[in-house]
Image 1: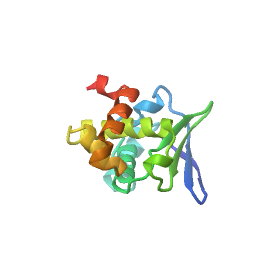
Image 2: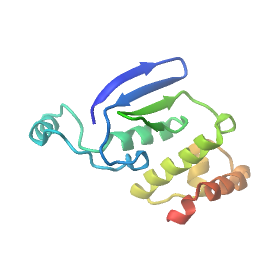
Image 3: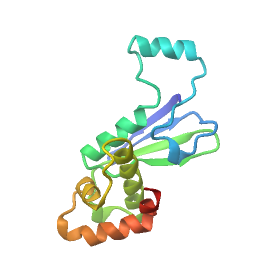
Length: 149
């Protein structure tokens, strides 16, 4: 993927990338990208000019979880896709869509990492306490994530 444009504002950063041929925005985490010039891409990786294929979004989501930021927002457009990263916000200030996206992104990272996606891990990711377990259970059920595992 080729980064086309980055815009910064007080509360968010937007990055626009050239289009992906057949990858759905929900499959960006852990998807191996296709290089236009594989020989050049392999040389760039060998000399540490760029990172290993397909690890960027996963690293970004892990860092976002570590710092308790709202989830990345992926938007598909006609000739590109845009990724938005937001400044810190509490769970109560997130929209329902953002909460479900945080749940989805957390489940993918946990599935490929430690394999421990559950109510406790999601509460920790969202900075919530044990008394809010019922609220997180409702979020997991609304998101449909529990059906995936």
